[in-house]
Image 1 (tube, one colour):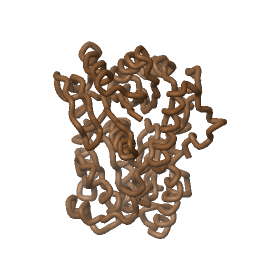
Image 2 (cartoon, rainbow, N blue to C red):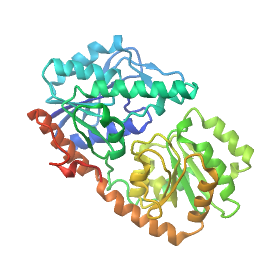
Image 3 (cartoon, rainbow, N blue to C red):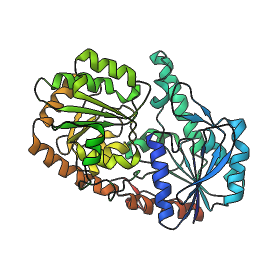
Image 4 (cartoon, one colour):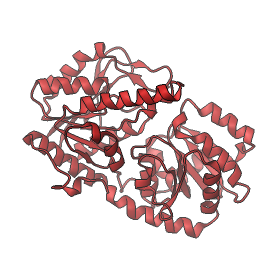
Length: 401
């Protein structure tokens, strides 16, 4: 099968959706499919290249000044690139990710040429509106408008999915067809408890004490500032170290906050971690924390679970589908730094509890194997080619575990 994936976010952009697209494209290609991606480039000229077995059509892109490392393809620049990608690659099916400029234009061209389209949503309005610093009422209006626009585009596709049941519930009421919950999936061979921690420990000079890890963008909606304040409190009860892996617009503020709290020597800011070093970093630590309030699934939490780590997560959006409170970690109310601090101290002071919860993480994440995700999307593609809907009632395997 020839699959063209259209995504406004793709390597080397650092975001959960871009990581999903690049890894899923590699998985599809590894399963014998011909795969191409059309994505935003980092310059004003269209280009083509290969990432492994995946052919990439780069549209002209311009930097987003308030989100470092992200590029945006403007509508009036991308049309020739998208038409060329479809003409040259001749896909059997198109798979759009989210609903922005590249995805919606690709959908329009594909439908005009009779090519079936599958759509997956990774979008939450909070990922954008937190940069605007607008009054709460205005932000709520923009959120509703963004959901309406996303649903308007998605209604045109032959098959719809989102990575969790929670993500489906956010958009389903505005759709006229069923949306399936299909996990982003995780490569359980690549992320596992047997990975070697030494490369990461050496590179980042990690201390020999319990380590709590965060991986992701250092941006406002990730609430890493709350994690730092809770960590400062928790250290009064337990001696452990915090590792913040990633980059983002809040990095300098967070480093200054750590200094103000007097915890700089107990916090490691790694900066960007290369993809090949991530498995070692997870293996080097003892637990994982995610305080984000706009997670439709959370790939980094899945990577940590696959490495056998317990998770402390915010009780927000879809994180409770991964973090089963009291089983493989703890949930806390977003913004409640005292509760977060208490649960940090409790978990980081008890190695036996961490091991028990980490084992439960392995059991839960087993239902999110990337090969299962591959099979589910292959079935969705075949249904789109037949122009026949796939029903959750008829195909329960397509719901996320």
